Length: 377
Image 1 (cartoon, rainbow, N blue to C red):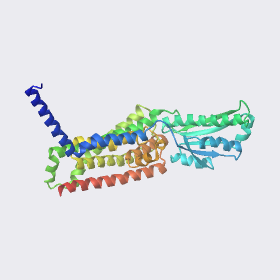
Image 2 (cartoon, rainbow, N blue to C red):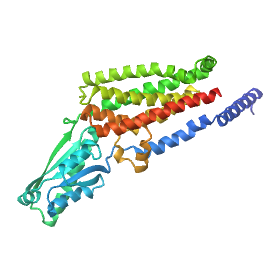
Image 3 (tube, rainbow, N blue to C red):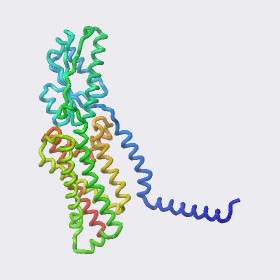
Image 4 (cartoon, helix red, strand yellow):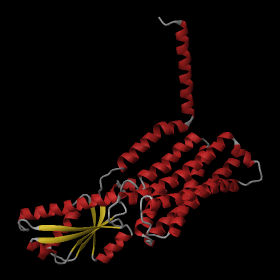
């Protein structure tokens, strides 16, 4: 038999549980964080992230029309790891490589059939080295594709026993295939995201919670002036962080900066404005530090790490996830930094990515100002 005191305690606990349950259902953000967020993260990252390399775009340059050359090229076309793009000349293939339209070049030389008949031929493979992990895996897959074709031709008697198909491989922009060279630029993206979006969202949301933000609205200061005042200190802080990161990358890790420092500062300014705009917009809408931090992590930090091409190859993701990656600004900044650090001033990469960041910055800053004005009304 339950004692009256214990029965009363159970009743109080049940009442508290009921009260908190009502509170959860009255607060949509709790349901979003507890139910929607795990499902979104599971679907997004579960389907999108993989260390495997698939559908890697590869330019195939076949400099002779023999059956042997076509057969060797078919090894790449039939492989599930490559998305073969036939091109006519090495110049065209190199142009595609510089613009990151392809991640590797396979060149079958004009004397391939004759050398294969003599028992010793060579295939040249060039890999874009800004992503050291993908470059390493791509080389291994390429060697596997050539070995498979050689085994098939040997079994059919088209290649003499003991014939050697050598692979002359070369990694562009990162000859030593040093993973630090592509990790450090990606880490700069994370640092800039953390300073720009998360810190801004938390600081402004804290002012909303304390009511100090509304106090500013009763002064003659206009909303846009308030937002500028909130933005400038964190912009300066972010640029100081960028300077420290670039200096650390050069001095501590020896990462080469082959592009222009002025362009690096310019594109970093655009990305920082985007990050600040996201932080201001989120804080203006949520007004809660907890909710602002959760949303900021979901829409900025995690995508910058997982869906920007920093850790995982975007070309290997399902097409639906690839489309989603276009809405995250980290994708464009990672491409810009990896290009400026390792490849140099390649304008065909810089212009489109910088234009997207500039457009995002303008839209986000405009939405932030409008969201603040709406609260005043």
